[in-house]
Structure formats: C-alpha cells, structure tokens
Image (cartoon, rainbow, N blue to C red):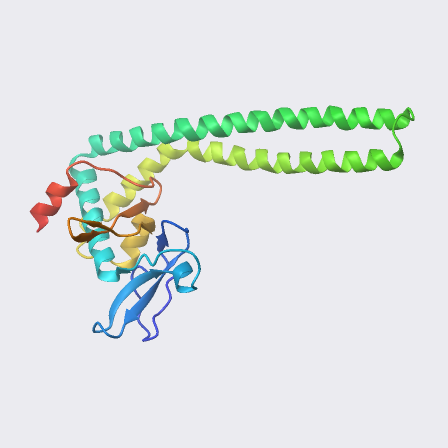
Length: 239
C-alpha cells in the first residue's frame, strides 16, 4: 500500500522496499537538514531493534530501478529469444532445487500420515483388548492425531508449492506480455513500476575504494530476480 508522506505527497516506491537482513519494510523519511531530501530506512532499525540502518535515498533507488527496468525491456524486446532462454535457465535451476525438496518432503509426510493411521488403529485394538487403559489411549491417540493433522496441512501447502513451481514457464510468457505492453514507456510511473516489480530488497551499504556501494535486488512479477549480461555497458551508453 502506498501511503502519503507527512506533507501529503505519495512516493512512487512507498510500500515496495524491504530490508535484506531482517525482511521488514523500509519506510520513507525526510531529512530536514538536507533540503528535505527523502530517504528510506529499515523499520526495525527505526524501532530501535536489532538491525542496521540500511539508509538509502529515494532518488538513488528510483534511478537504479528505472535503469534496470529500461535495460530489461530493451533486452527483452531486441533479443527476445535469448531473454526467454535466460529466464528458462534460471527457472530450471530454481525448479530443480525447489521441486526436489518439496516432492521429497511431501512424500515423507504422506508416508508418515499412513504410518500414523496404522498406529492409531493399533492403539484402538489394544484398548478394546484391554491392553491399554482408556486414559492412556486418549492421550496417545490425541497426540498422534494432532501430528497427523499438522502433516496433512503441510502436505496441502507442499502440493501448492509444487504446482506453483510447475507453472513458472507460463509466468515467463506473462512477463513478456507486460514487456510488450510497456515497451516504449517514457517515465517510470506507479502503474508501470507495479506492473513489473513485486518488491525491492535493499542490502546494507559497504565501502569499496573509499566509496559506499549499495546492492539492490529487484524482484520482478512472475519471474523474480533477473540477471542479464552487459548491463554495465548499457549504463555507460545511457550516461
């Protein structure tokens, strides 16, 4: 949700920035000693909890995102086949890891659910045969049934994750459709930004050769982070 500042203005990035360390949102602030310059700061840090400040100006983030988005659109438009292959390779690598893990976990959970059915049935038979007291039976069966219920919910979640991973190829085409729709955009508007971008992750700044360097990860809708070649060359041409 985009929220207005204290002066009634709405920043284009409002609600989209997240701290890489704690995962919490970053909020817009205004520095009164720097000609009202706007910057984003980690909400956890602002609440004086354990995290670094992760402070970065709104203008710097807007510039970085616009440059990345312009290059992504240019690359996808002019080199569509190569672009799709890059996304497919990235999706393949992620899918193999995610699917293998999710499928194994689902199979193990389903196996345990079957085992619990047999255990609960055996407990009932022991109770009927007088080998197990009613009180003991109730306590043990309640524990096993609670575990079974938890595993059943887990299997449901895992199946949804597996299905989501298997539809990622369709998502590539959905992203291509967005590129076609906004292939000639002139300025970065809230509509265009949210059509392309899901969220922006800000890492803590580091000092390199006497200068502070920020790492920003842009998570695009449908295809997540995109790593394209020759981005630095594009920036040099733009500047």
